[in-house]
Each structure stands twice: as C-alpha cells, then as structure tokens.
Amino acid sequence: MAPLITLIAGFALARIAGLAGFDPLDGTTDALRVGLAAMFALTGLAHFTEPRRSGLVAMVPSRLPRPALLVSVTGVLELAGAAALLIPATARWAAAGLGLLMLAMFPANVSAARRRLNLGGRPVTPLGPRTALQIAFIATAAVISFGT
Image (cartoon, rainbow, N blue to C red; front, side, top):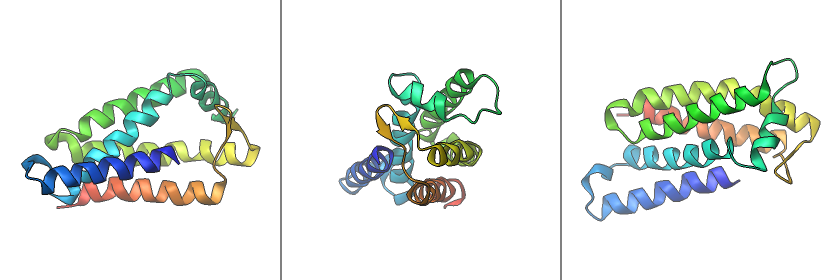
C-alpha cells in the first residue's frame, strides 16, 4: 500500500506546485511523472534495505537463478527509471521501460501471493488487490509514455 500512497501523495504535491505557479509541473502528466518517480524511488530503495530486501529475494520464483542479483538489478533499474522520469526528455522512455519492468516482475508477485510470503515482517498483498495495484501502476506509466 505504501507505493500507492507514495504515488498519490507525490502526484498531489506536484500538482499543487504546478497550480501554484511552478511551471515545470504545470500539467497532470508532469505531476504523474513526479508521483511515479517517488513511488519507484521508494520501491527501488527497498531492494537494498533490510528487512524488505530479504523478502524481495524470497519472492523470486525458484526457477530463476541468482535471486539476490535479480533483486539488485531490478532495484537499480527502478532507481534509474525514477531519475529518468524527472527529466522531460527521457520521461516517456523511462515510463515505457518501467511499465515493461513491472510486467516482467509481476510473476514474482503472483508467486509470492500464492506462497503467502511475508515481506519485511508483513504478508504480501493478496493476488486480487496486487493485480489491481499493478494495473494502476502500469496505466500510470502508459499515460506518461503515450500522453500528450
């Protein structure tokens, strides 16, 4: 739930800044970029901090090799994508890449939900709500990538 709250709060604060006259954020898509960047900064950092890192490593399906390395690589990609979302010239490509990354990582979420894993002491979000959240996150990336 923290990623969704971060996305919404980042969007709202950026939108308020835009409405208050901060021209670089004078648009809904610009505010969405900030919200999604904040969300990916949060989730990217979780790939490197305990106890979340151990939970993320446990989420990786057993058929994939080197789960700790995969968690590190996806964390770096999330952090790089978050930074690229904040640069107007790279934002569309970053959003597209992050959308594809979310699709690629979704099987790990399915696996974790089916195995009822704990992530940093908390149970993972059940599959239904997790799927709805993932759709919302991917839709946000799509709006940024294909928006005006």
